[in-house]
Image (cartoon, rainbow, N blue to C red; front, side):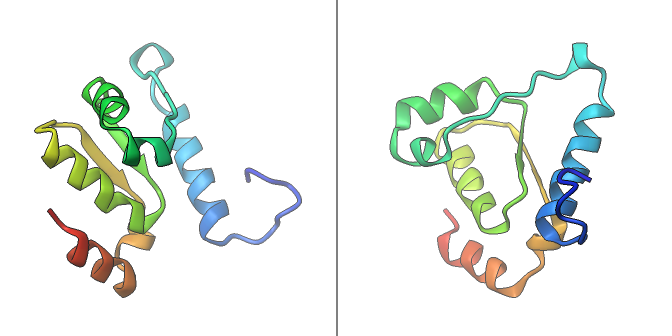
Length: 103
């Protein structure tokens, strides 16, 4: 569990726990984990291109945010993979958001 004060197993706790487990499961020499400023990636094209052109995979565990990565990948003609949390991917409101915002 990521936070011992939060004993329930809900979306955020499960997502953080699962992502941490996945990242720990890969050899450290094979994986470089970097975080980026999500708001800046949406407002600064130079920053977005710099960050995403040097990325193999984006982890998007917040359902409605994944569509921005799909959009940016297509806009800049990049080929990074998008790993998303399926628990949020199938929520109908998120699917509608992605449909409405698709490139």
